[in-house]
Length: 152
Length: 152
DNA sequence: AAAGATGTAACAAAAGATGTTACATCAAGA
DNA sequence: TCTTGATGTAACATCTTTTGTTACATCTTT
Image (tube, rainbow over all chains, first blue to last red; front, side):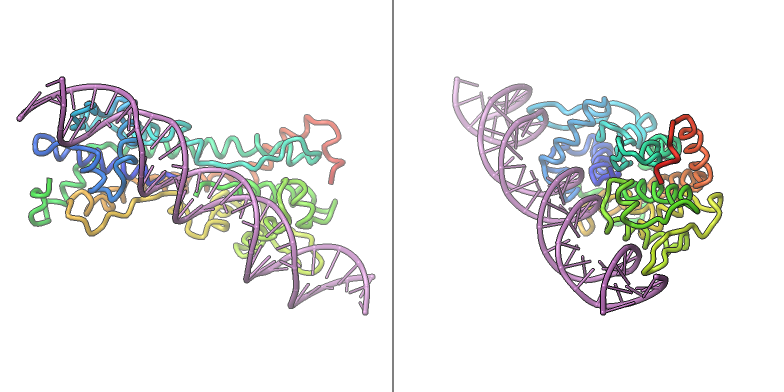
């Protein structure tokens, strides 16, 4: 990885979709404009979120919508939707098997435990961040602003 | 980030240095051979570990050694030695400031909290992994192997 | 002075992430 | 039915990051 920009864009999209519900039709072009990204990038992200069962994206017509209550959508679900290899892809080990040196022969297994703990910690932190909580934070921020609802 | 290969190599080097103490002089060439890497890469890593106060690397002569007890060296210290920006560099947010859309204006702040929690979780998991514990795991693995001590 | 080591800058190569174009496919309405 | 506007996806291009390499200055001991 990193927790790539894709993941941040995905959250952006989900918030947008939630906020626009009933007000405006959400298309990939609209999301591209809002995120400062590209329609194709957006379509790929939406496609992944769709496969993960988080949203529906009607073909032909457009108009993405959430399939679940925001409290049932976690950052971990979003992340794994986008990164098929999961948190493991965050971590790199140098290839050094087949060498004489006993350290080289065992380093991979030595690192297994600590790295696994890191992955678990990340997973847990991601599971505690729900779309619901992020929407609440968003509303807290947005209601202080003028004319913020007129944009959709 | 990621928890790059550099970090894994650094742990490899520290274990090697510890094990070779009193048996063989540890040079960048030797470590490069053991890690399957390059002497310059090793020198850069050792240089970072040195600046972090984890090892000494005598100039001219060579022969790296630990400056601290392995129980006082954590994976977090190793990681931050190599990644000056710390865990923050693990995370990416798309740039979308200055747009009309209220989601774009606030997404960065919305993500701040959950991402911060992830960083903390990683940090804590890294702090719990000491070089001591990794050495113990290494010895557990290595003592089952034949002739493993003859390599240094 | 010579040998063998580290420190570091500069460059090269490889890998990964992101952006773009092009086109097939689909759905709704005129 | 034809047009319009949307998604799905492959293919390619570009940019960035990571990793590897060469070269050379500097240091320490003999």
